[in-house]
Length: 156
Image 1: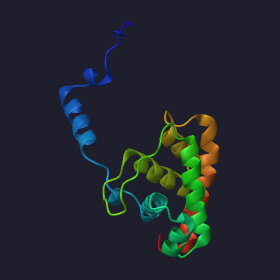
Image 2 (image 1 turned 135 degrees about the vertical axis):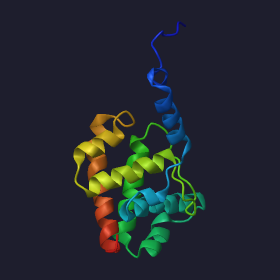
Image 3 (image 1 turned 30 degrees about the vertical axis):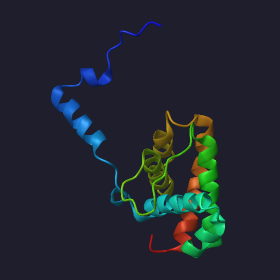
């Protein structure tokens, strides 16, 4: 196999920019960087994953936690749609963890864009991760999940 002689993008950056890039990559993304509706969606997906791992009915657990069956169903639909669209299994942390995994960061960004009705920002979040023909369906499901979570708790 021959290796390309194409320059590595980081090698083209000035040393200060390279250092800033490395610094940013080493700093974890934390939940407090996102609005409440995005964090609620991420935490709901975490709880869903925990219920499934414990071999309990995730709809029952999430319905009790969110005080809404429709919000729980919307989160389950969101997680299933992401599971089908993602190139590999999504990684989620435990509910107590303040740092977000890269997948959870994408979920939070999806929720932000969907709540704002910004389809272009939503597509930009998924670009290169999920095939374009899946963006519209994910947008609709994410919008629905965020709306149901907001209806279940008007404070978010």
